Image (cartoon, rainbow, N blue to C red; front, side, top):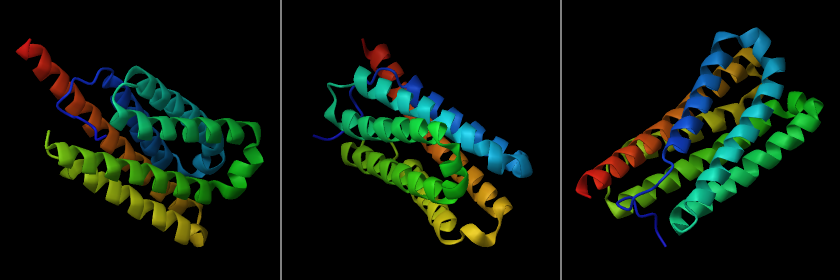
Length: 188
């Protein structure tokens, strides 16, 4: 079953919150590069726990819409499990930070691309920005995975930009869900 973007989707604000968390995390990473590499290990773990919880809440609240349930449930479980594991073992995070980020951003990019395809198939609103943010997030993930030794600043910078891009994709998605909900309320 496909995501029905013309159907009222409650709790759109969770996508906006998730996007704001990822975007703010990206800005802070870029503004404080030297401190970020070590500090990001703990911050990243907490971000994963928060966004995982947000995706699980969104999936729970919209469990009757199979299109919304699948990706949000998968993202929520992945983010929450990774966040807990990395909080318990911060030494793993420091040693594998670029690879963890790269793989997470690949998964997030695939989910954004999937959302874009579902939006396009339902023709409910322009899907290009969600697709663009998914492809751009994928490009940043590849940069992080294939060039981790360029230096901590490069890793931190590309991680920050990848976070902001992923955040913008979620913000746009949540904003469009908000507009659909408001339009459906006006029709009632």
